[in-house]
Length: 332
Ligand code: PBG
Image 1 (tube, rainbow, N blue to C red):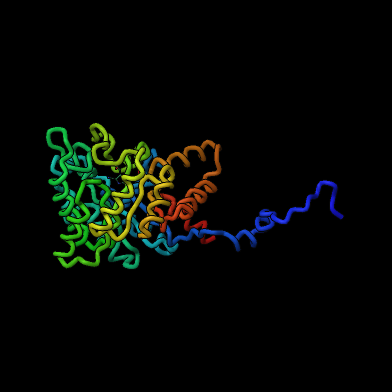
Image 2 (image 1 turned 30 degrees about the vertical axis):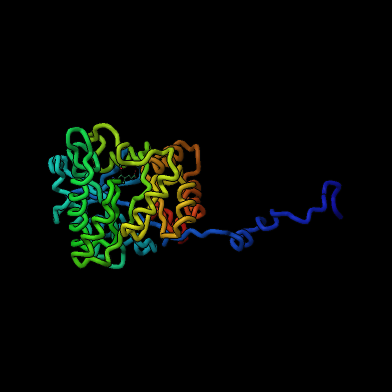
């Protein structure tokens, strides 16, 4: 018998939210371990796992410790790992020569991974900041980050990574013309199968702070990166950057940071249909971890909610420091 309060609705969306089975059945987007790329920090030495204070739960690993961690990631179904080096300050120079040293930390890491975990895709970062005495992504002359000389250096860096066996090159420097220059050099050197994921729409963001601590670039950086990274106020410009990088030979494109730029992710996917990724950057990770540590939010719930948000916004995948933690939960 209907109670006095019952009304005769035909449409009751809550019917489909009533049980986990019904919710599973109507869920519009799926998150899986295959959607995740795990960024990791490398350091010199042996048996080193050194915490990054501004990123609780994240460590810098020596190459010997990278290998088992990567194996675990691969076993969890994570398809790719992305390497970022913490470079000895003594190796940082104005011309960033360490960036294309075949024996630098990243290139040693690539070779170790391709030997031990060949099925895992290895992605790199292409930008000069870890090797630069002044912390910028490009070469600085008279206080200005010079474009074309930087592109030539980035090409050398890219070629050393390709030689070491990298599967995905990730130019994150935001110089003009670098995708085309790297692509041409790869083709000329018979590296035509090496893929490029361009950090195409990379904004000059306050969210990168903890990363700069992790790679040891914070102290070195003079000024900001606004003459090459994008203005957070811009949307149409992001679409032009994506279009340009696809034309120049990028296979995949990225929007960075993530959560504050989901509108850009959606528009990029809808406009170009290309493989589209977002980077849930260090500051996003740090904010969640800090609030969770205070007991102000449920960190695990927010981790999964944010990762799902990227899929909902149209991304094919997400670079996230949470990759192994999320993959473990998804497997459980
Ligand atoms: C280097 C680079 C940065 C990040 C990835 N590659 C920092 C920057 O541009 O200053 C940020 C990643 C993160 O914050 O997690 N060019």
